[in-house]
Length: 279
Image (cartoon, rainbow, N blue to C red; front, side, top):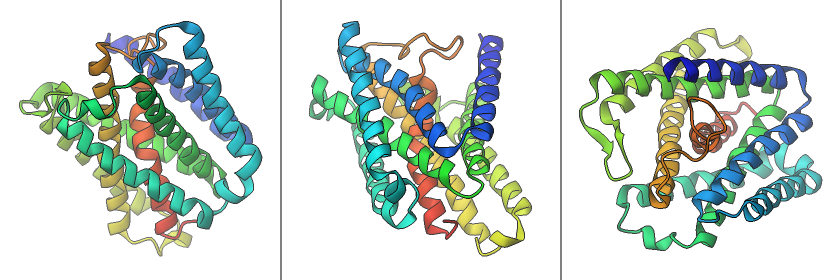
């Protein structure tokens, strides 16, 4: 299983690197929308809709939503830090509020148990992740920023996996995901902080105005948000009685099982770029 997981991850990494370095920002944004639409198809199943045609319609609704944003607001929203700042701020606040739902599960699950409510949450989770990635790609050196973001999320996940599997004793959220441990979280955070220190050391002179404390805070928030995204999908899977969101990725389960951390952390990373004066 671990070997299959590694092979799948390497293939996904190779495809991502080719796409992010070769495609223009608008095409990359469209490609991400298509990938996330596959995640929307899986999310419809977590919302309680098993019929294929309903799940397909939900995925098409997501694609239409992304296309509407691109055609109507691309120049003003995706390419303007002033315009996108409040949008990212709202997305980050919503994720912080969502932490209460995860922490209180299953006590407050009646608030979002309805299929329509779960579907709307899915549009927010996937839509916020897509918009944040689209904004990153459109920035100067966007492919570097987007790659760095993916590396941060992967570092958090890998660190948590290996530390948690060897030293994990205390569950992080036992009612949501019993296998995730507090030790694993700290392991992932330490790896991310080490990565943040490397980024600060390699930071070009033109970005010297970005304080090292800010870089470490970005790492901390992104690590925490990636875990929150992971736990959120785990919560919906547990409520739906599913072990995995799907079977699209060998060794990883469904596509949502890889997009969850990205969707959780992307708004925080994108907003951090605005707040530290990168864009």
